[in-house]
Length: 313
Ligand SMILES: O=C(O)CCC(=O)C(=O)O
Ligand SMILES: [Fe+2]
Image (spheres, rainbow, N blue to C red):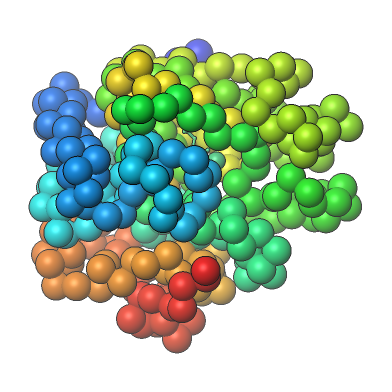
């Protein structure tokens, strides 16, 4: 039973507060390897050699404007040839934590987390593309500070209250997390906001002043190197990126097959066809073979055995 930094079981804390901070999901041997791998992919993203990146000025995909990078996408892509990311994604500590959080058997895990339901996805299209990715890196831009607005990943700010209630009631079948390789205090959350509709004041801020520094009840999540925060993607959150402070934070997700195959379209609509290559399959550690088979089986059941669908933009 894994507990958080306050000795509360992690699944209890995540359910209650909408976020949970955990130590030691990276070993001492893994940390320098992950840092080195990040340096290499950050350089590639900044010099344009790696095109899958998030660019300052744009919160949601597509990222076509600008050249100041705040995120590097697809760290598990075989073309990057960075095995440290895959080794960590399949590591015992991480899989144990995710299984406990999702109350699921190891054999029922799968890659990524996807959206809950196609109907929801239609409504939230713009957002969903943002959070469906498997494993990315969040970094400090070099030229400009950059703020993400207050948001829930799967409920757009303009959503009417009754619809918001409906969307918040949909089960997740997955979890996402940030793991800091360097000190990271970029993320802000409103604890316990993940299952209830916004108060009138929160609603007003998300719509009219989305970069507000004065959200009632806001908490700045301060991570030490090696710490992880798992957070419900519907917790009210924002992030502040500073060019002056080094950030290299692993941002990943994992799900369970309980969501059923209707999730497949949304998991794979974001250009994950590279997962279906021999090079990708050869890179899988034993611990991820069943989760990958589950992912493929789910895609096949949904008629998506090429692991790709039409782009949503
Ligand atoms: O930068 C962060 O820590 C949060 C990123 C985020 O909220 C998102 O990508 O939806
Ligand atoms: Fe988000």
